[in-house]
Image (cartoon, one colour):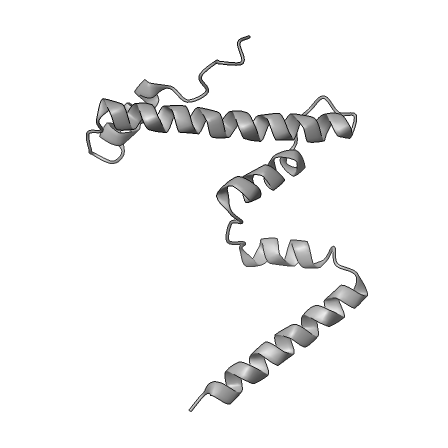
Length: 114
């Protein structure tokens, strides 16, 4: 399989714009989106592959992909459930520090109220 294989097809972009967004899209813009999307996906998959191989796995998992997504696209907004899931993995010291930071933030917000 070729490294230059398109993961996102031009027709998929044009069809989405037309069917879902009810808009036309110029060929040049659709092609630019195709090229950039393909480059982005290939970069993410390359980094994820490296991560999986470093852990002696032949399967790419979410934990391999997420760091690249966060680095390239920015951290997503977490739902309360995702926030809780990330908090339970913290040490007692980190939870204590977080508790203090939240307390300080709330005290500051309360002091600003008229």
